[in-house]
Amino acid sequence: MQAKGKAYLGMFKTFGPDVAKALEGTELVEPDEVYDGALTSIDLGGRMVELRTWGLAHTAGDQIVWLPQERILFTGDLAEERIFPIFPWFPPDDASIDGARWAQILSELVEWKPEIVVPGHGDIGGAEILVAVRDYMVDLGKRVAVERKSGKDADAIVATLAPKIRAEHPAWSAREWIDFAIRYYSTLS
Image (cartoon, rainbow, N blue to C red; front, side, top):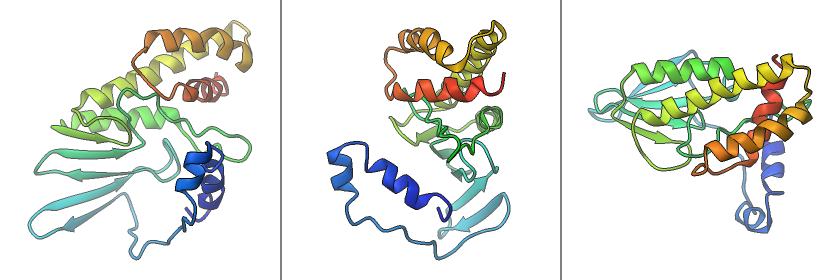
């Protein structure tokens, strides 16, 4: 938040007049408490809550909230339901993303066998949300790598692959993130 908060707030205000109006007067506030390391637990009077982070994945500081007794997982933007994953790929200003690590974390979260998954966006569901996002990302990465090996640049891959991806996921929204994901994966191949 300290490094990128103001810039992201400014960017979100460009998403249209309704968003700009909703963000009027928004102030970024530092947290009262922080934790060091990958995990901290909070006892909310008999209900244990775990806060976990893995470092660079979707962003440099993704965090999930896990209620182990209830098997409830809050994913933040690591997973969205029927929404294309948000790839914050804006080089050179912001390129803090590791898609392989992101997919690995989703696989780990599936192994926890959550009964309820509360995604960053979309409807509440189960572990199928995590599987769908992970499988999409892994598949897209492989497909972009094949296109790069054939000699195509990022623009050509977006032009040919993005329409196919949209057609394969007709019920998914936030289609604008497909191009960002393709451009990200095209830098890896």
